[in-house]
Length: 459
View (tube, rainbow, N blue to C red):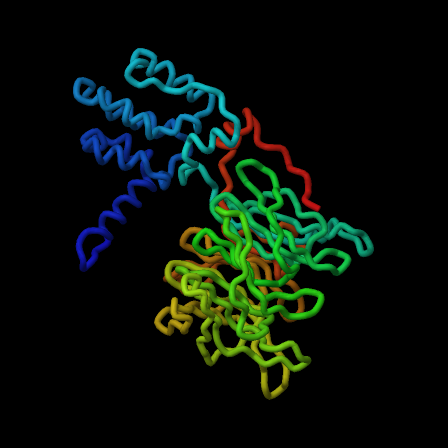
C-alpha cells in the first residue's frame, strides 16, 4: 500500500488500482462476498477493470447477490445498471437472460439490437481489460515490397502488441510519408506528411480501432511535415515543421469536442529537428536547430507552451542534440538518441544518450537512465504500461530494425525477441505512439460475430 502524508488517499487509489487489475480473481474469493453494497457498486462502475469480458462483471454481481438473496436481491436492479450489457456476446447475453428471467419485473433488462455507435454509447465505453495495449508505428516502410520507380511507398501502419511482441498491420495511408501522429484511447490521429510528388499534406485523419476505419477530419490551415503533434486536455496541438517554403513557426490546435481548428501563438523562432512531448498541461519542444540558414545554430534548451496561459517560454540547457525522440512516463519526459555536435571536427555524432526532463523543462539529475544499446537518431519511441520502447533508428552505417525496452529501476535496456515487421531493413523518423486495440472477442460483438474487414486505404 502506498503511504501519503496527508492521509489515505494514495492508499485508497493504490488499493482500487490493485482490485481493478485483479478483479476476476478477487471476485471468486470468499472475502469478495463480504463487500459492502456501496463498495461493490463503486467497483463495477470503474472503466479500469481488467476484465476480458463483461460476463465476468455480471457473474461477480450474481455471486455476491446469491450469497444473501433475502437481503441483496432488491439491490440487483441497481447493480445491473452498471453491468454493460451491450458488451456481451450473443451467447453471453443468452446466459444472462436465462438467469434473470425470473427477476424480469425487478431487473427489466434491455434486449434491443444496437448498431456500432449505439452499442458503444449505451455501454459507456469498454473496460480496460477489453483492450490490447501496444504501440502504433505509422510510416514503417515494407521495403521488401518496394521497387525503385514504383509508387508503392505507402505509409505502413502497424500495431505492436507489447504482451505478445507480435505485429499486426492496420489499414495503410496511401502514398504518404513523414506524418505525425497522436492517440487518445482507441483512436489514432495522423496529421500532415509529404506526398510522393513532394507536396505537403494538410490532412487530419483518425483511425478508429473499434470501427476499423479511417475518417477525415477538418484539415489544418497550413500543410506541414516533421512537426510536433501532441494531445493535451482533449485538444490536438500542431507546431513547427516544414512546408515547401522551409521551416515553420506557426502553431494551431484542434478541439476534439468542437471539431474545429484555432490558431495559437507561434514559436519564438524557427526550430527544426527537435523532438516533442506533452506533460500535465504543457507542450515541450526539445533540442533541435534554430534558424533556417545553411549554418543552423544548435538549440540549447526546451521550448515550453502552457496550454492554459497560452504562452511559450524558453528553458535553457547545456545539452545540444537534434533528431532525438521522446516519450512521457509518469511525471517525466524521456528523450533518447539523436545527434550531438563535435565542435572540433565540425560534424555530428550519433549518440546513445538518454535524458530525463521534469515538468519545468529542466534536466532531472536524480533519475539515471542507462544509455541506449546502440547510437541512433530518430528512433520510434513510445510508452507502453510502465515501459519505454524504442523501435529502429538511424545509425552510423545502417538503419536499425531492433526493438528494446526499459523500465525505471532496470540497469539496462532489454532487447525484444522480435524486430521491425521487415527485419531485413530498419527504419527511422516514423510516428510512434501508444494505442489501445479492442480484443478480438470485443470486435466480434461490435461487428456481428467477425472482426472488421480491412478498410480502404486513405488517399
